[in-house]
Image 1: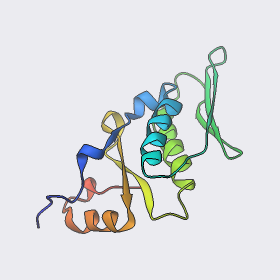
Image 2: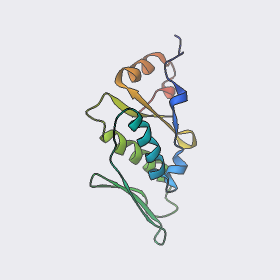
Image 3: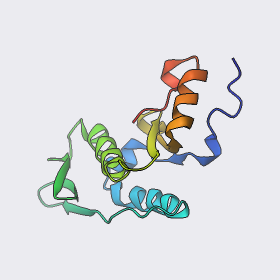
Length: 135
């Protein structure tokens, strides 16, 4: 099965989970927010709470606090930052036909804005499940 045109990787936002975890969620969010604005979709602001003295990093959106790390050595910070970012974005898109999907992970983490039909087509045509976009 041909994979030509299944996913437009030129549209991928390079996010890098390590960068997100190193107090980069708000910066990445602003880039994502501008891509959605190009589509006429406004995302709400978020707040970062960085306490370098105590070594904590949190992101706040919609009354929910996402803990990225409680100390500088938190081994889950990459995952926490990734989950927080995608949850914050996608929670605002529930009534729409688009979603921010994760491609790859870790330092290769990217995000793609896809409609439900683009997502379904990608999963149908990409033979390797590890290549599938994920929410």
